[in-house]
Image 1: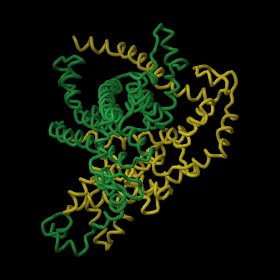
Image 2: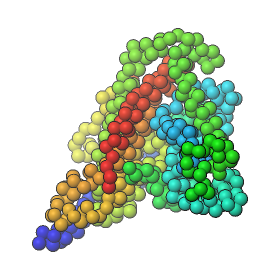
Image 3: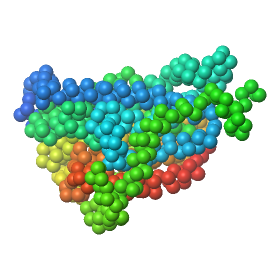
Amino acid sequence: MTAAVEVRRKPRKNLVLSVVAILLSVVVFLVPFAFIVLTAVKSRQEASRLDFSWPSQFHLVQNFVDVVQARDYMLIIAFINSTILTVASVAILVVLSAMVAFVLQRRRTRWTGLVNFLVLSGLIIPPAVVPTIWVLQKLGLFRTMPGLILIEVAFGLSFCILLFRAFIATIPRELDEAAIIDGAGPMRLFFRVILPLLRSVIITVVVVQSVTVFNDFVNPLYFLPGDQNATVQLTLYNFSSAYSTQYNLLFMDILLITIPPLIMFLFFNKRIVAGMTAGAVKG
Amino acid sequence: MEARPRTSVAGPAPAAGRKRSPYPSWFYLPAAIVYAVLFLVPTVTSFYFSLTRWSIFDSQFIGFDNYVTFFREPALVSGLWHTVVYAVITSGLKVVLGLGLAVLLTSQIIGRGYLRSVVFFPVLVSTIGVGLTFTILLDPEEGLVNESLALIGIQGPGWLTDPSFALVSVALVDVWKGVGLATLIYIAGIVSIPQEYFEAARVDGATAWQNFRKIVLPLARPATFTVILLSLIGGLRSFDLIWAMTRGGPGFTSDVIASVIYKQYQAGFYGLSTAGNVVLFLLVTAIIFPLSRYLNSKEVDL
């Protein structure tokens, strides 16, 4: 009896709840994004009013050209820098952390405990800023792109190792043994047998780390200051002070910087979700 | 079994291991070098440099002077306090809202996929972009938030310009941006709860609230721990959002340790900046390590 009532009552209650949830989501989450888009296509005067309104005229192309040309094509240079930074650091991260995760998962030695401890420490401990600059300076890497790339690698290792290790645990050891019997050395075993099997987790790592590195503001701010090699997040930040009266351009910049993560999200939604929730469920 | 003693057993490894394991320890080496040079060395040396007057090129040992300065300066001490407040507010709200949203988004509801996407997307957006956008939206005079509040007759506060609101406002924006990740973790946790529990509860005639209280809440506990730890770790070192929105102002009312570190670095007080870093290190380890040990000891089996 009660069950029947519940079944009948259920759909109706959920309809109301759905409408409320969707309306709230529009107000809370979509309006800010709509505001970015609308302001980005307004004229300077209209944008300066800061209101949430339909633009009387669309200045999409004009604002785009203006923001790209600003300060001698700074934004283009920044996009190139950010791309180099992201691609290089993520590529190195994938190889180095997969190697560590492979041995860490497969073989127990006196190092295992230490490595596990260091991996966790890397997740928890906030990096010491000025001493890192000091080390970079000693190595001649301060204010250089290679320096920043290595920084992103060092700070991203822990997260990637954990993801890879969890995935490698699901690859049967028999596969390794078959390859070893066929005469494969460690290098061949890893690069020819294991690495190709990691495809799906590699995609996850690449996507999640790309978004992280692309959005990183703090590390470029400290370790790669200066205008010539600014990354997109730094230019955005600098724009905000230089263009405090041209909100249309500021928001066009924000819009352009939001597009790469949006593309990642549209194509790799599932992979991102998988990567970000990894380890959340296990005991 | 005898065919592969050295791969799995630690005991007889030394003799056989030297022979060439298929899992060589030197695979650690490239990562270890980068990690040691750029993370471990700075972390360890920070303890020494925090005791010096330092100009990158030469350092002069001055004992605990930097710490004395740090804890004598009210603006810096309040940064320590703000850091804790900020971390507690953000992680508390992420737990509560994340759990609520996850329950909602795992229930029978129209537009579930849309809602999940829209809640999660801000996680992927540039923090600086979010910070600048909300700085405009929260403008006391012309901002969309206060204009909307005015329509229903509420006079909104100066979210980012009023000293008593600034830190909390930034924390709320942090929650707006980060709650999607917490929701996602909770959804993964709730989905992994075996259906039998809910079926048994239905047979016993449990209400929705009882379901939540007696099944979801206790069995989603690992997710809660993950959310608490992740958001505390993030909240304690949080810098970019605060810097994009208030730069620690008005006055020092939204300064946190991470922004103090940056300000002292900019001002050229490298020793003091590093002392700030050590304080942050100690704060994080003093909170996170015992907490994670405690939480791990309370793990439940599904």
